[in-house]
Length: 216
Length: 350
Image (cartoon, rainbow over all chains, first blue to last red; front, side, top):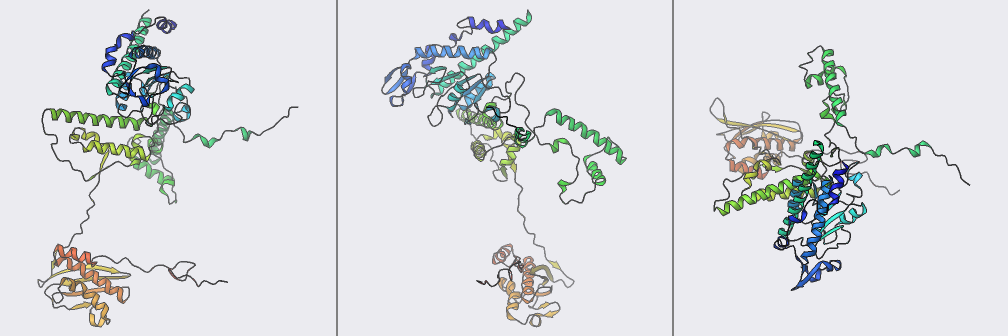
């Protein structure tokens, strides 16, 4: 059993996550489009390629690297049977994200976030709950354009986070930020597809490895 | 220097009442069901009946016989019911052995409500997709007209019972708005079964008053009866057709029974309203009440009797004139600390 857990950690890309997307896919899904110059957040400046006609363009080379790291991390978490929670407060994509989570066999929370959900879980969700092991933010802002409470709560409860940060978001407390567009439907569908494929791949690999171990 | 502080056990005990409502485990409910079945067989043996065919009604009768109780509240009396009726349905533990919750929306807090919203939104998208397909093929959208009246949505309490979860008013109104949006689409007939789960029929409350048909006596004259009341007076009137306007009360002519003009006017008002003053004869009996009350009672009785002689439109006119309504005014009771129903005792400053 030790071998099952330590073997994936020796390879840099055990789940071959790089094959899932190309730069052209990201460009076609309009991931590089950011908000206007006035909405720009100070900490997002390193991730921005440039500004055209007042609209910020996100650097897709950096996005590729960050996305690869994030997908690799989610694959490892899913391989070890961790609980993944998809969070977003965008009303347009609520249904899409919930269906993605259901398809993966993981969990989603695209509704109003009650204050003590992570910090007060033993009382709110029942005694002896297991908290999520990874939080994936498909949109870091809530409906009032402020950082989502779950980022701060996950940092408090030492839960790693993966998040798609747009040009008006604060990437500070997120462990694996992914600079990219979070407003276009095509971009969201791309992210959902990528996360779904990585998680399913990781789970399948885990089942295969367990079957091989049992045969020995 | 250290001081030894002694406290009582009472300070260290936890607050027992703060645990919340009792949570019953599945094993507990199973044991209760077994005990109930055993008890049912014992009871049947005691009553000398067959344990196999002992129904719930027999149990209730047996318990009422063995434990007679004079308490007024039926729910306070001893009862023996199946545990599923006594212990309310509760949520079992939501996660498996490895700690992973069963439902994919568990971490929202209100999993059944949000999964319901998710499903309903999915039906909405389905209907929209179907509509788009039909418009692409240039086919007509709506086939039959739906019956809109006669159904209502589930109330908030009924929805709470269905979901086994508390809802807020805001949540409930949002769900109803989503359902209304779904129903408003032309192709919503596809999801009719799903919508029917959340709607209930309202029984038609039209209680039409049946107007009795005319009866005919030995001479072939049409007549009809009516009853009326006012304060404590009760009256019955029989109105005959082809008459000359004679009115008899308790065997006495109205001129002798009601010497006051006001009472006679009250009696004649229905006939005057319909314009049939000299055309009908009336024989009435009245008891109770005073002079004015008896007159009012006979007026109501004669109006009710006249409904059979008259068209529906004129019945509606009579109803709007107030001839067919029972006057609800009765003598108000005297209250303690006051001289009459409203009059207080004289206020004295000192």
